[in-house]
Image (cartoon, rainbow, N blue to C red):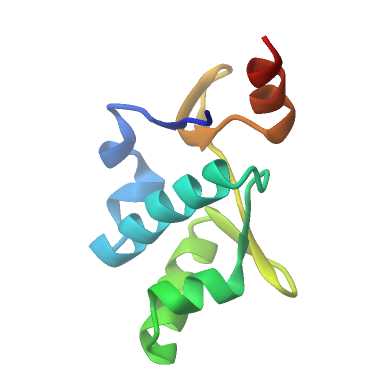
Length: 106
């Protein structure tokens, strides 16, 4: 089983505070999808398109996430950038494939 981590300080981080509710929701849902399917932080553009069918609205939301450094746009996917504060604190993120597979083997 994979997990998504959302710290209780998530909503007050400067990268998150200015996001629209749509962008915040897509960030959390996208992180969850990537974790569940062991995509190591990759999020297929077709998945985003199904969640936000309006091209205009999707472009606005993606622009917000990219501008805040939370997503990086690639050819066929977005790369989710872990939101890290300090040395070992993650505001939102998930285990990578190798960690989940090791846990499953135990």
